[in-house]
Image 1 (cartoon, rainbow, N blue to C red):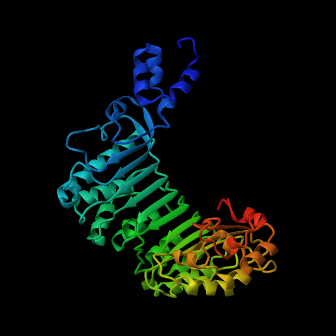
Image 2 (spheres, rainbow, N blue to C red; image 1 turned 45 degrees about the horizontal axis):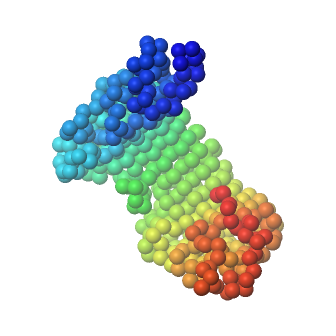
Image 3 (cartoon, rainbow, N blue to C red; image 1 turned 30 degrees about the vertical axis):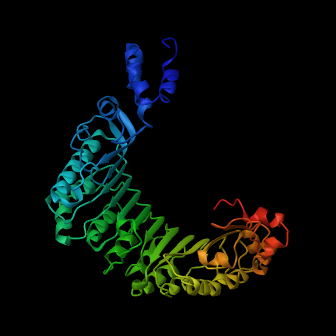
Length: 454
């Protein structure tokens, strides 16, 4: 080993597990020095369950990513806040599993926020931190919450920031107090934050401070659910409209959203719609109508009751759209029908559309018949998500292939590829559908409806 060049030894060490790697320090001074070389560690990921956590934090010069609990378990105290091991990505998660009462004890939240602030400050000082993911877990905003929020907002050099679990019991005054002394230097490219009324002052602050560099914004549902929030003021839309480099946006319909159409760089938007958002639908429709640079639109309709809220969004689609998805979550039978009927009337003007994704109970025959080569010459990919109830009518892909609308579509679009999610190719031998009972295999058509990469 001593005769091998350093570059070759580093390549080998890169593939060793941590126990073996640390043992190599005992071989010789030269090998021991190479063990601590940055190239050996820069692509490794470490979490707090790793039995070699403490030695690595003491010896390793850097890591690709590190997973850190918001509070330390009582029997273990890794030096997260004092380590000289610089990471490119820091992910903080919840509270320690060892502490069964932590979710009911506000003191644990406070200690967790202060500990997390120290960990973030330490990594910022080490100079490699580019991605930060932090949950603001707490019952209500307090002093420690303010400290953590200020730390998150003021961390310099970040390119990705993800903030979740924003406390619901707070006021704008608490958030503004956390941010009043923070001076931002634009560096973020990706920003993701849970969207609640309490979080809006923080969100608008980050959007304004990183306006020059932000390319993707994801305002997610509270608690990772589909309980999307819609703003009560136009401040969110105004902040988004001020992002000159914005390319991708995920949010719910917002008041004043028409202003966001001014973002000439915006190419993709995902809108998450609930039945109670009818007041903001017109503004979102204005945005879709005016956004002439949009190439991809994903409309997700959420609700347990049938609703035609959001039909206006479909009718407002700009002819610039190339990729379109209309999907439903937690929806009853027929929930997406009004939106698909609206799409049928809109399709003739979507000449650039080449990929379409839809939810439907069964085969959306009228929709498929409205897709024509003369009005949709670019069309080449169709992805269908039938509901479970549709399996009673069309139990397998073979049954789909015998439908007139689908056979016509495959005939007039020679390059078309179709994906029907969650459906078997054929019925069981003992329960064949009409198509399977015919005995044909539709080999040529199956080559175009299977194994499609969407």
